Length: 375
Ligand code: G3I
Image (tube, rainbow, N blue to C red; front, side, top):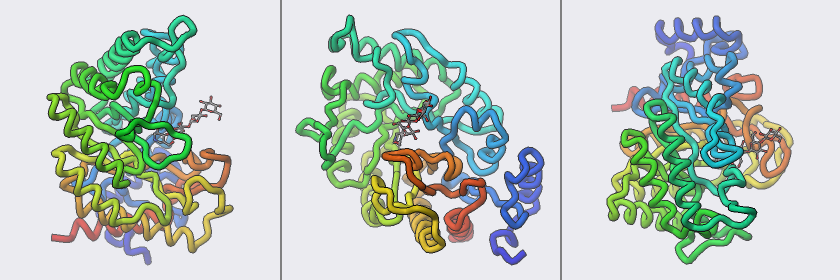
């Protein structure tokens, strides 16, 4: 027992780890056959920890691994409009998502809903009417109906929804925006900027108890801080319920700067909303869009561990502002970064392809334990 993390294991954690290992071989046992501590337990209620999952994972032995570490799940894809209503208005395919959500609830996990209104993974029928672009009135009616039906269907089972995803965009070539930096998505083009108001109103009417989030990437970008803050203030000024800001947090070993992330957490906190880290991963490619890392070298894994530790230290420091940290996937094999923006090697998560803890995992665990004992 040379690993200090292992030495501080309590009898309760050990029993739990052993029980999990019995359910899924290898699950709670590290490469050296030692039990792997639960990251969620180490972070504790001060910073609820979650993982993005697939329905197949929740139907497999991976569910026990997720339950071991996390208290929250979010569907990586299974609850997007293209999955829930692929064919036509008013027609839904809830079976797969229902099975996943119900399994999570049985395991005592909370479920984030991702996502209601986005410019991607929305079925083609949404924006078409008799082969033409849908009219504004019809699109508003369809949007209200979709949100109402989906939020009502999951009412009481999904505790938080990403209502609108990625509505703003700054400094990206080939992305058209309006003067406020709002992305000219079909929602914005056809309805106008008020599509955001309509979406939040419909979601809160369907489930007044669900937490409603605006979710985006690069939320530390100064232009985005300004635009998103203005939007939140406007929504609140009009009496529309918005509870939180979701920071996707798709990071790399060098980007973004810690100081920028901290400044943005502080700035958003002034809006009187909660914040969640909703899709955290830290790519080994310093530029997320490049393919420059053929494998995970010890040097890169150490750099990644340092970054994860720095970020979690920051999140714990600002835990009064944050109500969850969710990583975007269970293990490196599953990560979307292996196939976006091209097929390549990536390893951005805390567990490796064999679901074994990486240096980043142990680094975060140490940070969590240190925060527990701190005054
Ligand atoms: O479902 C098909 C499957 O039938 C087919 O065999 C396979 C072949 O490639 O493709 C499957 O669809 C893929 C889907 O993921 C499910 O794996 C799509 O091609 C692929 O584009 C899709 O990517 C998802 C991406 O959103 C789409 O924009 C990623 O998994 C998912 O991680 C990613 O998640 C987004 C968040 O929702 C919002 N924030 C950014 C984040 C990363 O892009």
